[in-house]
Amino acid sequence: MFDLRDLYQQVIVDHNKRPRNFGKLADFNHQADGYNPLCGDKLHIYLKVDDAGVIEDVSFEGEGCAISVASASLMTDALKGKTMQESEEIFGHFQHMATSELDEAPDEEVLGKLTVLAGVREFPSRIKCATLCWHTLHAALQDSPEAAKTE
Amino acid sequence: MDIRAIRNDFPILSQQVYGKPLAYLDNAATTQKPQCVIDALQHYYQHDNANVHRGVHALSERATAAYEGARGIIARFFNARSEREIIFTRGTTEAINLVASSWGGANIKAGDEILITHMEHHSNIVPWQMLCEQTGAVLKVAPINEAGELIMPEFEALLSKRTKLVGVVHMSNALGTINPVTEIISKAHAVGAKVLIDGAQAAAHLPVDVQALDCDFYVTSAHKMYGPTGIGVLIGKEELLEAMPPYQGGGDMIRMVTFEKTEYNDIPYKFEAGTPHIAGAIGFGKALEYISSIGFEAIGKREKALLAYATDKAMAFDGLRLIGTASDKACVLSFVLDGIHPHDLGTIVDREGVAIRAGHHCAMPVMQFYKVPATARASFSIYNTETEVDALFAALKKAQEIFG
Image (tube, rainbow over all chains, first blue to last red; front, top):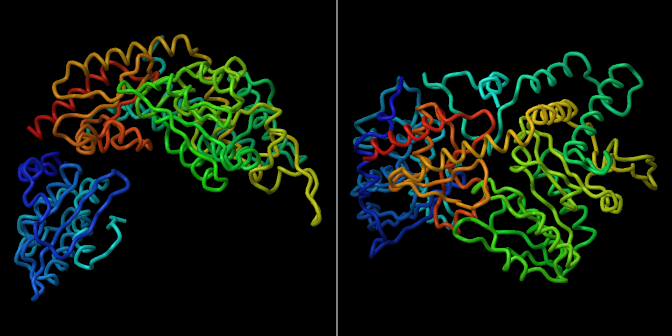
Protein backbone atom coordinates (compact mmCIF):
# COMPACT_ATOMS: atom_id res chain seq x y z
CA MET A 1 0.00 0.00 0.00
CA PHE A 2 1.05 3.55 -0.63
CA ASP A 3 2.45 5.43 2.29
CA LEU A 4 1.82 9.09 3.04
CA ARG A 5 5.56 9.59 2.81
CA ASP A 6 5.35 8.73 -0.89
CA LEU A 7 3.29 11.87 -1.34
CA TYR A 8 4.89 14.03 1.31
CA GLN A 9 8.52 13.23 0.57
CA GLN A 10 11.14 15.23 2.41
CA VAL A 11 11.95 17.21 -0.74
CA ILE A 12 8.33 18.31 -0.98
CA VAL A 13 8.06 19.22 2.68
CA ASP A 14 11.29 21.18 2.30
CA HIS A 15 10.21 23.07 -0.83
CA ASN A 16 6.90 23.90 0.87
CA LYS A 17 8.67 25.32 3.87
CA ARG A 18 11.31 27.18 1.88
CA PRO A 19 9.96 27.70 -1.62
CA ARG A 20 12.61 28.60 -4.21
CA ASN A 21 12.14 31.52 -6.61
CA PHE A 22 9.31 32.92 -4.50
CA GLY A 23 8.32 36.55 -5.06
CA LYS A 24 7.98 38.95 -7.94
CA LEU A 25 10.78 39.24 -10.54
CA ALA A 26 12.17 42.75 -10.84
CA ASP A 27 12.33 42.31 -14.59
CA PHE A 28 9.85 40.08 -16.41
CA ASN A 29 8.11 39.97 -19.80
CA HIS A 30 5.49 37.23 -19.33
CA GLN A 31 3.09 36.56 -16.47
CA ALA A 32 -0.17 34.80 -15.68
CA ASP A 33 -2.54 33.95 -12.86
CA GLY A 34 -3.56 30.43 -11.94
CA TYR A 35 -6.54 29.52 -9.81
CA ASN A 36 -8.05 26.32 -8.54
CA PRO A 37 -11.69 27.10 -7.76
CA LEU A 38 -12.15 23.82 -5.88
CA CYS A 39 -9.71 24.64 -3.13
CA GLY A 40 -8.98 28.32 -3.60
CA ASP A 41 -5.28 27.87 -4.42
CA LYS A 42 -3.88 30.92 -6.21
CA LEU A 43 -0.62 31.30 -8.10
CA HIS A 44 1.05 34.01 -10.10
CA ILE A 45 3.98 33.24 -12.37
CA TYR A 46 6.56 35.72 -13.67
CA LEU A 47 8.85 34.89 -16.58
CA LYS A 48 11.83 36.59 -18.15
CA VAL A 49 12.30 35.11 -21.61
CA ASP A 50 15.16 36.30 -23.87
CA ASP A 51 14.99 36.96 -27.60
CA ALA A 52 16.07 33.40 -28.39
CA GLY A 53 13.07 32.08 -26.41
CA VAL A 54 15.16 30.88 -23.47
CA ILE A 55 13.78 31.30 -19.93
CA GLU A 56 16.34 33.46 -18.17
CA ASP A 57 14.46 33.71 -14.93
CA VAL A 58 11.17 32.60 -13.44
CA SER A 59 9.41 33.12 -10.11
CA PHE A 60 6.04 32.60 -8.46
CA GLU A 61 3.82 34.07 -5.78
CA GLY A 62 0.65 32.79 -4.16
CA GLU A 63 -0.76 30.51 -1.56
CA GLY A 64 -1.77 26.90 -1.55
CA CYS A 65 -1.23 23.49 -0.08
CA ALA A 66 2.19 21.86 0.29
CA ILE A 67 1.80 19.99 -2.99
CA SER A 68 1.00 23.10 -5.02
CA VAL A 69 3.71 25.24 -3.42
CA ALA A 70 6.38 22.52 -3.69
CA SER A 71 5.38 21.79 -7.27
CA ALA A 72 5.70 25.46 -8.23
CA SER A 73 9.01 25.73 -6.42
CA LEU A 74 10.44 22.63 -8.13
CA MET A 75 9.06 23.76 -11.48
CA THR A 76 10.72 27.16 -11.35
CA ASP A 77 14.05 25.50 -10.47
CA ALA A 78 13.68 23.13 -13.41
CA LEU A 79 12.79 25.76 -16.00
CA LYS A 80 15.74 28.12 -15.86
CA GLY A 81 17.77 27.88 -19.03
CA LYS A 82 15.11 25.91 -20.89
CA THR A 83 13.49 27.18 -24.06
CA MET A 84 9.76 27.85 -24.21
CA GLN A 85 9.42 24.82 -26.44
CA GLU A 86 11.30 22.59 -23.99
CA SER A 87 9.19 23.91 -21.11
CA GLU A 88 5.98 22.91 -22.84
CA GLU A 89 7.45 19.47 -23.48
CA ILE A 90 8.34 19.04 -19.82
CA PHE A 91 4.77 20.11 -18.97
CA GLY A 92 3.49 17.29 -21.19
CA HIS A 93 5.74 14.75 -19.48
CA PHE A 94 4.79 16.05 -16.05
CA GLN A 95 1.08 15.90 -16.83
CA HIS A 96 1.55 12.34 -18.06
CA MET A 97 3.41 11.35 -14.90
CA ALA A 98 0.74 12.85 -12.64
CA THR A 99 -2.04 10.88 -14.29
CA SER A 100 -0.33 7.68 -15.39
CA GLU A 101 -0.76 4.16 -14.04
CA LEU A 102 1.07 3.41 -10.82
CA ASP A 103 3.31 0.74 -12.34
CA GLU A 104 4.65 3.10 -15.01
CA ALA A 105 8.01 4.52 -14.01
CA PRO A 106 8.29 8.30 -14.53
CA ASP A 107 10.75 9.54 -17.15
CA GLU A 108 13.63 10.62 -14.92
CA GLU A 109 15.75 11.76 -17.83
CA VAL A 110 13.29 14.51 -18.80
CA LEU A 111 11.76 15.21 -15.41
CA GLY A 112 14.74 14.91 -13.09
CA LYS A 113 13.89 16.13 -9.60
CA LEU A 114 10.26 16.67 -10.58
CA THR A 115 9.69 12.91 -10.25
CA VAL A 116 9.32 13.35 -6.48
CA LEU A 117 5.79 14.48 -7.31
CA ALA A 118 4.87 11.15 -8.92
CA GLY A 119 3.14 10.20 -5.64
CA VAL A 120 0.10 12.35 -6.50
CA ARG A 121 -1.05 9.59 -8.86
CA GLU A 122 -2.21 7.67 -5.81
CA PHE A 123 -4.22 10.67 -4.56
CA PRO A 124 -6.66 11.59 -7.34
CA SER A 125 -8.07 14.61 -5.50
CA ARG A 126 -4.56 16.09 -5.27
CA ILE A 127 -3.35 15.79 -8.88
CA LYS A 128 -4.61 19.27 -9.69
CA CYS A 129 -2.60 20.70 -6.80
CA ALA A 130 0.56 19.51 -8.55
CA THR A 131 -0.40 20.59 -12.07
CA LEU A 132 -1.79 24.07 -11.33
CA CYS A 133 1.63 25.74 -11.64
CA TRP A 134 2.23 24.08 -15.01
CA HIS A 135 -1.11 25.25 -16.38
CA THR A 136 -0.19 28.72 -15.12
CA LEU A 137 3.21 28.51 -16.81
CA HIS A 138 1.50 27.54 -20.03
CA ALA A 139 -0.83 30.56 -19.71
CA ALA A 140 2.14 32.83 -19.07
CA LEU A 141 4.03 31.54 -22.12
CA GLN A 142 0.91 32.22 -24.20
CA ASP A 143 0.42 35.64 -22.55
CA SER A 144 -3.12 34.56 -21.70
CA PRO A 145 -5.10 37.35 -20.07
CA GLU A 146 -7.32 34.83 -18.29
CA ALA A 147 -6.36 32.97 -15.14
CA ALA A 148 -5.27 29.40 -15.81
CA LYS A 149 -7.47 26.67 -14.38
CA THR A 150 -6.72 23.02 -13.90
CA GLU A 151 -9.95 21.93 -15.59
CA MET B 1 -28.57 7.28 24.75
CA ASP B 2 -27.05 4.03 23.51
CA ILE B 3 -24.41 5.09 20.96
CA ARG B 4 -23.53 1.51 20.13
CA ALA B 5 -27.15 0.76 19.19
CA ILE B 6 -27.34 3.95 17.13
CA ARG B 7 -24.11 3.07 15.31
CA ASN B 8 -25.55 -0.33 14.52
CA ASP B 9 -28.41 1.44 12.73
CA PHE B 10 -25.88 2.83 10.21
CA PRO B 11 -24.32 -0.03 8.23
CA ILE B 12 -21.74 2.18 6.49
CA LEU B 13 -20.00 3.06 9.76
CA SER B 14 -18.59 -0.39 10.48
CA GLN B 15 -16.16 -0.38 7.54
CA GLN B 16 -12.43 0.19 7.41
CA VAL B 17 -10.67 2.57 5.06
CA TYR B 18 -6.95 2.09 4.33
CA GLY B 19 -7.03 -0.61 6.98
CA LYS B 20 -8.19 1.79 9.71
CA PRO B 21 -11.67 2.01 11.25
CA LEU B 22 -13.68 4.72 9.50
CA ALA B 23 -14.22 7.87 11.59
CA TYR B 24 -16.81 9.78 9.58
CA LEU B 25 -16.55 13.40 10.72
CA ASP B 26 -17.98 15.14 7.66
CA ASN B 27 -21.59 15.26 8.74
CA ALA B 28 -22.03 18.93 7.91
CA ALA B 29 -21.50 17.94 4.27
CA THR B 30 -23.87 15.01 4.43
CA THR B 31 -24.94 12.51 7.07
CA GLN B 32 -24.95 8.74 6.73
CA LYS B 33 -28.23 6.86 6.36
CA PRO B 34 -29.76 4.45 8.86
CA GLN B 35 -30.91 1.03 7.70
CA CYS B 36 -34.58 2.05 8.06
CA VAL B 37 -34.11 4.81 5.44
CA ILE B 38 -32.22 2.49 3.10
CA ASP B 39 -34.99 -0.10 3.56
CA ALA B 40 -37.72 2.46 2.85
CA LEU B 41 -36.07 3.38 -0.47
CA GLN B 42 -35.65 -0.26 -1.42
CA HIS B 43 -39.17 -1.17 -0.36
CA TYR B 44 -40.62 1.59 -2.49
CA TYR B 45 -38.72 0.52 -5.61
CA GLN B 46 -39.31 -3.16 -4.96
CA HIS B 47 -43.02 -3.01 -4.18
CA ASP B 48 -44.73 0.33 -4.77
CA ASN B 49 -42.95 2.12 -7.62
CA ALA B 50 -45.42 4.09 -9.77
CA ASN B 51 -46.04 7.71 -10.63
CA VAL B 52 -48.01 9.75 -8.12
CA HIS B 53 -51.25 11.74 -8.41
CA ARG B 54 -52.28 10.24 -11.75
CA GLY B 55 -52.77 6.49 -11.89
CA VAL B 56 -55.90 4.73 -10.78
CA HIS B 57 -54.06 1.46 -10.28
CA ALA B 58 -53.00 -0.08 -7.00
CA LEU B 59 -49.30 0.77 -7.26
CA SER B 60 -49.95 4.41 -8.07
CA GLU B 61 -52.33 4.66 -5.13
CA ARG B 62 -49.73 3.14 -2.81
CA ALA B 63 -46.98 5.41 -4.15
CA THR B 64 -49.22 8.46 -3.77
CA ALA B 65 -50.19 7.47 -0.23
CA ALA B 66 -46.54 7.00 0.75
CA TYR B 67 -45.44 10.27 -0.91
CA GLU B 68 -48.25 12.29 0.65
CA GLY B 69 -47.72 10.43 3.91
CA ALA B 70 -44.16 11.73 3.94
CA ARG B 71 -45.50 15.27 3.46
CA GLY B 72 -47.62 14.73 6.56
CA ILE B 73 -44.64 13.50 8.58
CA ILE B 74 -42.64 16.56 7.55
CA ALA B 75 -45.51 18.93 8.42
CA ARG B 76 -45.80 17.43 11.90
CA PHE B 77 -42.02 17.30 12.43
CA PHE B 78 -41.67 21.04 11.80
CA ASN B 79 -45.11 21.86 13.24
CA ALA B 80 -46.36 23.48 10.03
CA ARG B 81 -49.95 24.72 10.06
CA SER B 82 -50.92 22.27 7.35
CA GLU B 83 -49.51 19.92 4.73
CA ARG B 84 -50.25 22.60 2.12
CA GLU B 85 -47.28 24.51 3.51
CA ILE B 86 -44.86 21.69 2.64
CA ILE B 87 -43.28 22.05 -0.81
CA PHE B 88 -40.88 19.31 -1.89
CA THR B 89 -37.73 20.60 -3.60
CA ARG B 90 -34.41 19.11 -4.67
CA GLY B 91 -32.91 20.52 -1.50
CA THR B 92 -32.20 23.71 0.39
CA THR B 93 -30.56 25.36 -2.60
CA GLU B 94 -33.57 24.84 -4.85
CA ALA B 95 -35.92 25.96 -2.07
CA ILE B 96 -34.06 29.27 -1.72
CA ASN B 97 -33.99 29.73 -5.49
CA LEU B 98 -37.73 29.05 -5.56
CA VAL B 99 -38.39 31.82 -3.03
CA ALA B 100 -35.96 34.25 -4.68
CA SER B 101 -37.42 33.64 -8.10
CA SER B 102 -41.12 33.35 -7.31
CA TRP B 103 -41.69 35.48 -4.21
CA GLY B 104 -38.76 37.78 -5.03
CA GLY B 105 -39.77 38.20 -8.66
CA ALA B 106 -43.27 39.25 -7.62
CA ASN B 107 -42.39 41.42 -4.63
CA ILE B 108 -38.93 42.95 -5.02
CA LYS B 109 -38.44 46.27 -6.82
CA ALA B 110 -35.53 48.58 -7.50
CA GLY B 111 -34.34 50.22 -4.30
CA ASP B 112 -35.66 47.47 -2.02
CA GLU B 113 -33.16 45.81 0.27
CA ILE B 114 -32.43 42.17 1.03
CA LEU B 115 -30.52 41.60 4.24
CA ILE B 116 -28.35 38.54 4.82
CA THR B 117 -25.42 37.85 7.17
CA HIS B 118 -21.68 37.43 6.66
CA MET B 119 -21.87 33.75 7.61
CA GLU B 120 -24.25 32.60 4.87
CA HIS B 121 -23.60 29.60 2.64
CA HIS B 122 -23.25 30.50 -1.05
CA SER B 123 -26.75 29.12 -1.60
CA ASN B 124 -28.18 31.89 0.60
CA ILE B 125 -26.07 34.58 -1.10
CA VAL B 126 -26.05 33.93 -4.83
CA PRO B 127 -29.86 33.61 -5.45
CA TRP B 128 -30.31 37.01 -3.76
CA GLN B 129 -27.48 38.55 -5.77
CA MET B 130 -29.16 37.27 -8.93
CA LEU B 131 -32.49 38.72 -7.80
CA CYS B 132 -30.83 42.07 -7.03
CA GLU B 133 -29.23 42.10 -10.49
CA GLN B 134 -32.59 41.49 -12.12
CA THR B 135 -34.57 43.99 -10.07
CA GLY B 136 -32.16 46.72 -9.00
CA ALA B 137 -32.63 45.80 -5.34
CA VAL B 138 -29.67 46.09 -2.95
CA LEU B 139 -28.05 43.25 -1.00
CA LYS B 140 -27.00 44.20 2.53
CA VAL B 141 -24.78 42.06 4.74
CA ALA B 142 -24.91 42.07 8.54
CA PRO B 143 -21.40 41.64 10.02
CA ILE B 144 -20.07 38.99 12.41
CA ASN B 145 -17.54 39.26 15.24
CA GLU B 146 -14.29 37.34 15.77
CA ALA B 147 -16.14 34.52 17.53
CA GLY B 148 -18.29 34.08 14.45
CA GLU B 149 -21.47 35.50 16.00
CA LEU B 150 -23.87 37.84 14.28
CA ILE B 151 -23.48 41.37 15.70
CA MET B 152 -27.12 41.99 16.61
CA PRO B 153 -26.98 45.82 17.03
CA GLU B 154 -25.45 46.11 13.55
CA PHE B 155 -28.03 43.71 12.16
CA GLU B 156 -30.79 45.85 13.67
CA ALA B 157 -29.19 49.04 12.34
CA LEU B 158 -29.37 47.59 8.82
CA LEU B 159 -33.10 46.88 9.13
CA SER B 160 -35.34 49.57 7.68
CA LYS B 161 -38.58 50.06 5.80
CA ARG B 162 -36.60 49.32 2.64
CA THR B 163 -35.78 45.80 3.93
CA LYS B 164 -38.15 43.44 2.18
CA LEU B 165 -36.54 40.13 2.99
CA VAL B 166 -34.11 38.84 5.61
CA GLY B 167 -32.29 35.61 4.78
CA VAL B 168 -30.43 34.06 7.72
CA VAL B 169 -28.77 30.74 8.34
CA HIS B 170 -30.12 28.96 11.44
CA MET B 171 -26.80 27.23 12.08
CA SER B 172 -23.60 28.03 10.16
CA ASN B 173 -22.04 25.10 8.32
CA ALA B 174 -18.58 26.69 8.39
CA LEU B 175 -18.55 27.88 12.00
CA GLY B 176 -21.25 25.97 13.87
CA THR B 177 -22.77 29.23 15.12
CA ILE B 178 -26.46 29.02 16.05
CA ASN B 179 -28.18 32.31 15.27
CA PRO B 180 -30.85 33.83 17.54
CA VAL B 181 -33.50 33.31 14.88
CA THR B 182 -36.53 34.05 17.10
CA GLU B 183 -35.17 37.52 17.85
CA ILE B 184 -34.08 38.04 14.23
CA ILE B 185 -37.55 37.14 12.94
CA SER B 186 -39.42 39.43 15.32
CA LYS B 187 -37.05 42.35 14.61
CA ALA B 188 -37.43 41.81 10.86
CA HIS B 189 -41.20 41.57 11.11
CA ALA B 190 -41.26 44.83 13.03
CA VAL B 191 -40.07 46.66 9.87
CA GLY B 192 -42.38 44.63 7.65
CA ALA B 193 -39.74 42.32 6.14
CA LYS B 194 -40.32 38.65 5.37
CA VAL B 195 -37.82 36.14 6.74
CA LEU B 196 -36.29 33.03 5.20
CA ILE B 197 -34.38 30.72 7.56
CA ASP B 198 -31.79 28.41 5.99
CA GLY B 199 -32.09 25.30 8.12
CA ALA B 200 -29.86 23.00 6.07
CA GLN B 201 -27.38 22.60 8.90
CA ALA B 202 -29.66 23.11 11.90
CA ALA B 203 -32.59 20.80 11.32
CA ALA B 204 -30.82 17.58 12.31
CA HIS B 205 -29.51 19.08 15.53
CA LEU B 206 -32.17 21.48 16.85
CA PRO B 207 -35.94 21.18 17.20
CA VAL B 208 -37.66 23.49 14.71
CA ASP B 209 -41.22 24.72 15.21
CA VAL B 210 -42.08 27.01 12.30
CA GLN B 211 -45.20 28.33 14.02
CA ALA B 212 -43.35 29.24 17.21
CA LEU B 213 -40.57 30.84 15.13
CA ASP B 214 -43.16 32.63 12.97
CA CYS B 215 -40.72 32.52 10.03
CA ASP B 216 -42.18 33.11 6.59
CA PHE B 217 -40.01 30.49 4.88
CA TYR B 218 -37.98 27.64 6.39
CA VAL B 219 -35.84 25.54 4.05
CA THR B 220 -33.78 22.42 4.58
CA SER B 221 -32.35 19.26 2.95
CA ALA B 222 -33.09 15.63 3.79
CA HIS B 223 -29.54 14.41 3.24
CA LYS B 224 -28.17 16.34 6.20
CA MET B 225 -30.88 14.72 8.36
CA TYR B 226 -30.04 11.04 7.65
CA GLY B 227 -32.29 11.09 4.58
CA PRO B 228 -31.56 10.71 0.85
CA THR B 229 -29.86 13.29 -1.36
CA GLY B 230 -31.87 15.15 -3.98
CA ILE B 231 -34.85 15.95 -1.76
CA GLY B 232 -35.55 18.88 0.52
CA VAL B 233 -38.34 21.11 1.58
CA LEU B 234 -39.62 24.65 1.51
CA ILE B 235 -42.02 25.34 4.35
CA GLY B 236 -43.86 28.59 3.68
CA LYS B 237 -46.78 30.44 5.19
CA GLU B 238 -49.88 29.45 3.31
CA GLU B 239 -51.01 32.98 2.43
CA LEU B 240 -47.61 33.77 0.96
CA LEU B 241 -47.44 30.57 -1.06
CA GLU B 242 -50.99 31.15 -2.35
CA ALA B 243 -50.06 34.59 -3.63
CA MET B 244 -46.75 33.51 -5.23
CA PRO B 245 -46.56 32.72 -8.94
CA PRO B 246 -45.38 29.21 -9.94
CA TYR B 247 -41.63 28.54 -10.04
CA GLN B 248 -41.51 25.98 -12.85
CA GLY B 249 -44.17 24.97 -15.32
CA GLY B 250 -45.07 21.42 -16.21
CA GLY B 251 -47.17 18.47 -15.22
CA ASP B 252 -48.79 18.18 -11.79
CA MET B 253 -48.65 21.94 -11.16
CA ILE B 254 -51.69 22.63 -13.36
CA ARG B 255 -55.42 22.17 -13.04
CA MET B 256 -56.38 22.84 -16.63
CA VAL B 257 -54.29 23.49 -19.73
CA THR B 258 -55.39 24.90 -23.09
CA PHE B 259 -53.18 26.70 -25.60
CA GLU B 260 -54.92 29.92 -24.66
CA LYS B 261 -54.61 29.69 -20.90
CA THR B 262 -53.46 27.49 -18.06
CA GLU B 263 -55.04 27.32 -14.66
CA TYR B 264 -52.59 26.44 -11.91
CA ASN B 265 -53.03 23.80 -9.26
CA ASP B 266 -53.42 24.60 -5.56
CA ILE B 267 -50.49 24.64 -3.17
CA PRO B 268 -48.37 22.67 -2.57
CA TYR B 269 -48.70 21.14 -6.07
CA LYS B 270 -48.45 24.51 -7.79
CA PHE B 271 -44.73 24.41 -6.92
CA GLU B 272 -44.08 20.76 -7.75
CA ALA B 273 -43.89 20.58 -11.53
CA GLY B 274 -42.96 17.22 -13.01
CA THR B 275 -42.58 13.80 -11.47
CA PRO B 276 -41.07 14.38 -8.04
CA HIS B 277 -38.37 12.42 -6.22
CA ILE B 278 -40.96 10.05 -4.79
CA ALA B 279 -38.55 7.59 -3.18
CA GLY B 280 -36.57 10.50 -1.77
CA ALA B 281 -39.63 12.02 -0.13
CA ILE B 282 -40.53 8.66 1.41
CA GLY B 283 -36.97 8.25 2.68
CA PHE B 284 -37.05 11.82 4.05
CA GLY B 285 -40.18 10.98 6.04
CA LYS B 286 -38.55 7.84 7.38
CA ALA B 287 -35.42 9.79 8.39
CA LEU B 288 -37.53 12.26 10.37
CA GLU B 289 -39.28 9.39 12.14
CA TYR B 290 -35.83 8.05 12.98
CA ILE B 291 -34.79 11.39 14.48
CA SER B 292 -38.04 11.58 16.44
CA SER B 293 -37.48 8.08 17.81
CA ILE B 294 -34.29 9.36 19.45
CA GLY B 295 -35.63 12.80 20.32
CA PHE B 296 -33.99 16.21 20.22
CA GLU B 297 -33.43 16.33 23.96
CA ALA B 298 -31.18 13.29 23.84
CA ILE B 299 -29.60 14.40 20.56
CA GLY B 300 -28.81 17.89 21.87
CA LYS B 301 -27.34 16.59 25.11
CA ARG B 302 -25.14 14.04 23.37
CA GLU B 303 -23.92 16.32 20.60
CA LYS B 304 -23.11 19.08 23.10
CA ALA B 305 -21.03 16.69 25.17
CA LEU B 306 -19.10 15.46 22.13
CA LEU B 307 -18.44 18.99 20.86
CA ALA B 308 -17.21 20.01 24.31
CA TYR B 309 -14.87 17.00 24.36
CA ALA B 310 -13.51 17.85 20.91
CA THR B 311 -13.22 21.56 21.72
CA ASP B 312 -11.17 20.84 24.86
CA LYS B 313 -8.81 18.67 22.83
CA ALA B 314 -8.54 21.34 20.16
CA MET B 315 -7.70 24.07 22.67
CA ALA B 316 -4.95 21.92 24.17
CA PHE B 317 -3.49 21.08 20.74
CA ASP B 318 -0.27 22.90 19.90
CA GLY B 319 -0.51 25.24 16.92
CA LEU B 320 -4.25 24.82 16.37
CA ARG B 321 -6.51 27.85 15.88
CA LEU B 322 -10.26 27.36 16.12
CA ILE B 323 -12.34 29.22 13.54
CA GLY B 324 -15.76 29.85 15.05
CA THR B 325 -16.05 30.02 18.84
CA ALA B 326 -19.60 31.30 19.25
CA SER B 327 -21.09 30.83 22.70
CA ASP B 328 -24.07 29.15 21.07
CA LYS B 329 -22.77 26.59 18.57
CA ALA B 330 -23.23 22.96 17.64
CA CYS B 331 -21.43 20.03 16.06
CA VAL B 332 -18.82 21.91 14.00
CA LEU B 333 -15.10 22.15 14.75
CA SER B 334 -13.49 24.35 12.11
CA PHE B 335 -9.78 25.00 12.48
CA VAL B 336 -6.40 25.72 10.95
CA LEU B 337 -3.01 24.32 11.97
CA ASP B 338 0.18 26.41 11.89
CA GLY B 339 2.26 25.70 8.81
CA ILE B 340 -0.01 22.99 7.35
CA HIS B 341 -2.56 23.77 4.66
CA PRO B 342 -6.04 22.30 5.35
CA HIS B 343 -5.89 20.27 2.14
CA ASP B 344 -2.73 18.53 3.24
CA LEU B 345 -4.42 17.85 6.57
CA GLY B 346 -7.45 16.41 4.79
CA THR B 347 -5.28 13.99 2.81
CA ILE B 348 -3.19 12.93 5.79
CA VAL B 349 -6.07 12.30 8.20
CA ASP B 350 -7.96 10.46 5.44
CA ARG B 351 -5.15 7.89 5.33
CA GLU B 352 -5.78 7.38 9.04
CA GLY B 353 -9.42 6.61 8.33
CA VAL B 354 -10.68 10.01 9.44
CA ALA B 355 -13.03 11.80 7.01
CA ILE B 356 -13.10 15.57 7.41
CA ARG B 357 -13.74 18.44 5.01
CA ALA B 358 -11.00 20.81 3.93
CA GLY B 359 -11.85 23.90 1.95
CA HIS B 360 -14.02 27.00 1.99
CA HIS B 361 -17.22 25.09 2.85
CA CYS B 362 -19.19 27.05 0.24
CA ALA B 363 -18.81 30.06 2.52
CA MET B 364 -15.95 32.02 0.92
CA PRO B 365 -16.92 35.30 2.66
CA VAL B 366 -16.38 33.55 6.01
CA MET B 367 -12.86 32.55 4.90
CA GLN B 368 -12.24 36.16 3.76
CA PHE B 369 -13.37 37.43 7.19
CA TYR B 370 -10.88 35.21 9.01
CA LYS B 371 -8.22 35.83 6.33
CA VAL B 372 -7.64 32.12 5.74
CA PRO B 373 -7.77 30.41 2.32
CA ALA B 374 -9.56 27.42 3.78
CA THR B 375 -10.19 25.58 7.03
CA ALA B 376 -10.25 21.96 8.10
CA ARG B 377 -13.63 21.03 9.49
CA ALA B 378 -14.68 18.10 11.62
CA SER B 379 -18.45 17.94 12.03
CA PHE B 380 -20.29 15.60 14.34
CA SER B 381 -23.51 13.68 14.47
CA ILE B 382 -25.43 11.43 16.84
CA TYR B 383 -23.35 8.38 15.94
CA ASN B 384 -19.89 9.86 16.53
CA THR B 385 -17.79 8.85 19.48
CA GLU B 386 -14.98 10.14 21.66
CA THR B 387 -12.78 7.42 20.13
CA GLU B 388 -13.32 8.98 16.70
CA VAL B 389 -12.40 12.41 18.04
CA ASP B 390 -9.24 10.86 19.50
CA ALA B 391 -8.48 9.36 16.07
CA LEU B 392 -8.76 12.83 14.53
CA PHE B 393 -6.29 14.37 16.94
CA ALA B 394 -3.88 11.45 16.62
CA ALA B 395 -4.02 11.95 12.85
CA LEU B 396 -3.34 15.69 13.26
CA LYS B 397 -0.27 14.80 15.33
CA LYS B 398 0.88 12.58 12.49
CA ALA B 399 0.46 15.49 10.08
CA GLN B 400 2.66 17.62 12.30
CA GLU B 401 5.30 14.88 12.33
CA ILE B 402 5.30 14.69 8.53
CA PHE B 403 5.62 18.45 8.25
CA GLY B 404 7.92 18.70 11.28
